[in-house]
Length: 189
Image (cartoon, rainbow, N blue to C red; front, side, top):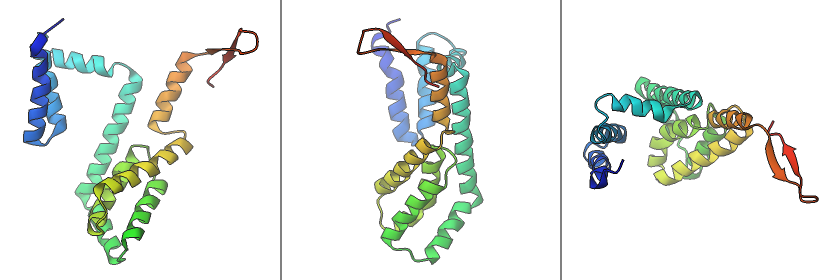
């Protein structure tokens, strides 16, 4: 199906709505809905699009994990737990370096998932790092770089389970043996 210039409308709507509403999820959902309507799939095209995009149960489990993490972070913010933590840490009068080290410590040792860690560290340390004049980019780097090593060391993270499932589903991998040209079997697990 070739829609020509009409195929640019959903992207333009997404960009314009993102700037106007400052809500990317809403903007992308509206753009997908408009794209489905332009493609002529009617009102039921959007649920069909979501079903095809999610497709596998493995991806659905990852999506549910991410949804749970988002709800948990929102819960911490709404209950005031993060604000109270910030007030307690402000009383300690941490220097700029100590604030960064504390963000590093949180990223390394507060671990639930490879996605939860950066979200938790970022939302928890945002106000402290702003007051210590640490850029948000640096805080983002600290939060992300400290969650990555932990996610490699802990083999039960969301992506590790997903990738393991893919490897098990692949079965035996064949690679050429350099000595005689025959193939040897390599089992992923």
